Image (cartoon, rainbow, N blue to C red):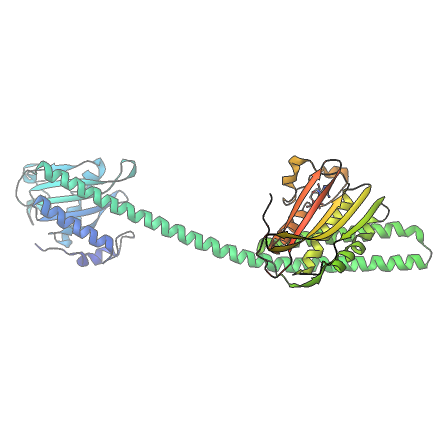
Length: 424
Ligand code: ADP
């Protein structure tokens, strides 16, 4: 009889998918375990078989001839089926085993002690089987020792299963990440194209509306002007909505490019009046600009700053039927950090205290859109995200029926990450 060492099992292993790779830690662990079982039970032959789709397959062994592996495995079947230990003191005296080729001939096996490898849900993951060539009884300690070794083998298999699952999960995650990256890239390209595709015809429409307005005025066709104005207003509204959605998508896709440069604060604030003049027209609203003296420069992204202010001012005008809309700018200090506070105050419909937390959520409109205010509910969400990207924030306080005050705080200097303390 030949002592089988693990590497000799290589040929058989190549067929079973989950078999421990030759030379792997698991293979070594199983070889050690079978040797330990042989020593503990003082028997020459030990076989470790694993359950494989209703049958058993050879995993490791000592003292047996690999060519006879299939015959050895036949001893394991009943243990696998019943998931309980099996012991036999004299196989030759039992008519069920007497004619077995390894009992009647070959090594002339006589005694058997086998313990199942306990798995989840009362299943056996395999069998650890000890065989002797002389009739004998096994001691209680040996029996318990064999079962303990079988449990160790089961634990090792369970560990392996979890490692495999983890590896699969890691692979799934990597796949999902790759897909997300591909999707994000496709989204960027799509957004860039869509922005262009949507804006080009809209700009053409707006250009035509402007031409029509001039021609209608020149031709004395004043009755057409209200319709032309509707085309112009709707077109501009659509451009604003598209810009909001594209801004949001860009923010979601990653940090948008910021272009910081020194901006003179007072001229920028004065520019705002001209920007909202058309919205103020026809409304019984006073416009006030209150600028602290010596405001100087701010180093920030001027386009984003204008966009935020325009959004706050447009809202102030939209939600105020009469009274006043004010833009006030002053220097604010937090310790040794210097900020500029742009405050937009109105005497409009105000916001209920329990609705303030909804203001900066995407697509949320605090007032019933049926009241005809229009909008997408994106302006403030985008404005706050821009403000935070620039190292600042937007704060709000409001009183229902009396008006609102939105304050944009931005760091004056170069350090964009120097965020002011959040107050929400
Ligand atoms: P939009 O104005 O396009 O709906 P915003 O994000 O700019 O989106 O504003 C969200 C909501 O916050 C508005 O729909 C409105 O209900 C409320 N809101 C914003 N500014 C004011 C304001 N100055 N006064 C009252 N309500 C306001």
